[in-house]
Amino acid sequence: MAPHAASIVGSGPNGLAAAVILARAGIRTTVFERSAHVGGGARTAELTLPGYRHDVGSAVHPLAVSSGFFRRFQLDRRVELRTPERSYGHPLDGRPAAIAYRSLDRTAHSLGVDGPAWKRFFAPLVDRAAHVAQFTGSSLVRVPDHPIAAALFGLRSLEQGGAAWNLRWRDDAAPALLTGVAAHSVQPMPSLGTAGTALSLATAGHAGGWPIPVGGSQAITDALVDDLLAHGGTIEAGVEITSLAELPPSDVVLLDVTPRALERLAGDALPDRYRRTLLDYRYGPGIAKVDFALSGPVPWSDPELQKTPTLHLGGARQAIAASEATVARGRHSDDPYVLVSQPSIVDDSRAPAGHHVLWAYTHVPSGSTVDQTEAITRQIERWAPGFRDLILASTSATAAQMEIENPNYIGGDIAAGAATLRQLIARPSLSPEPWRTPVPGLYLCSSATPPGPGVHGLSGAYAARSALKHEFGLHRLPALGIGQGW
Image 1: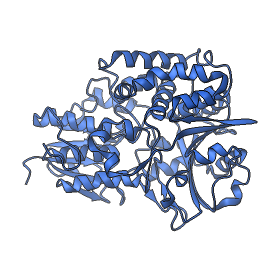
Image 2 (image 1 turned 90 degrees about the horizontal axis):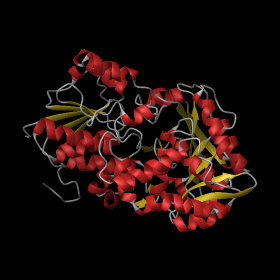
Image 3 (image 1 turned 180 degrees about the vertical axis):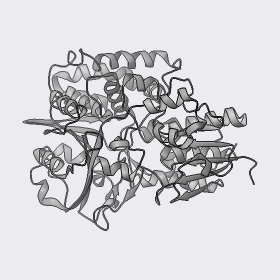
Image 4 (image 1 turned 30 degrees about the vertical axis):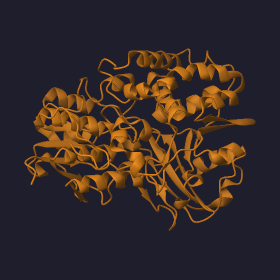
């Protein structure tokens, strides 16, 4: 039996990443999950009809390619990742859709008058894509390892995050294409948070693409679980931890939970100042999600969109910015931004032959109880007339229901905290090691720590690395690849 023990609360990708690392380091590791299902948002299930497999949370995984943890874990050897030529698309009224191809040159050519500007903007980042991923995938409270890449990224974020965000562009297509990605941040725009999100994801789209795992996001969770179990780890599903006192004796505890839940679990063990920091942490707007089972492919007016797995609906840049501002003010938008994934166009295991699944969400005020099925359907119909006729079944989750399903989604906030400037730097506290709490042996490993939201496993990996160093005196990570050991 291993001489040391670790307990992890929460089995999302970050909790599982931390568990894999600790188990590989020879520490007896147990993961506790309140749900009967493991994986948090990285899960796939038959939500509508038998044979139609929908991603419960995340569906497309640009960070799976750029994540340092997943590269060391050799995810691409454990899961079949299909990376389409078209990373994402953006339909526009009365004209062809804007498409971001993996090829930067092809994208620039397709954008017409703004093509040269798009290439000048992204080429220095794409050329340094690995350095950009390392910078954006780390805590900002540190000296960057690659200062040129960081400076290039920062200058472009300042441009697209401020009053100058339209000065570069002469037409509508390029700024709309970039704004659709920026809206992943679920924040009013322009801002540094929305610009940083856009640059990070768009650079990944041109460098490594936006892959889709065959079998759904569940395949990523299954790969992590299999590795954990193979190295002596255990998982206790259907067990809700309401206090740290309920955990077995452990040398280290890692929590894949929100700052609010950390405060509740640890209680008086936390110093007052740190406790106030956790309670002051702010959450953003929510999402409302709808999954559709379809009798055929979506009839997009622009045929290019029928070959593009990820789409951003909302029209021109100004329209999306107005919609996001409305949501930030606590109201539902009449012209909502809708994020769409059609994974079955590249993975036919998701639905019966000739049929398809469609995943879609829109942004709503925190805690909203309003069903968005009609609003999302109407926005899809805007660019795909006849879509309604293909719907065999649908299932909806309001923002309030998202939180019931996963308490980490406070008010439906899937980003685990508002991407404000303050919380980009202090997430949740201002520290070079924000994963480490003031309580000895207690660590936070959720997306509320750097580098933030996304299926990348890095928040868990950084927390585990910190725990190995401070609790066990181990200053290097164990090997994580297939068949590798210390």
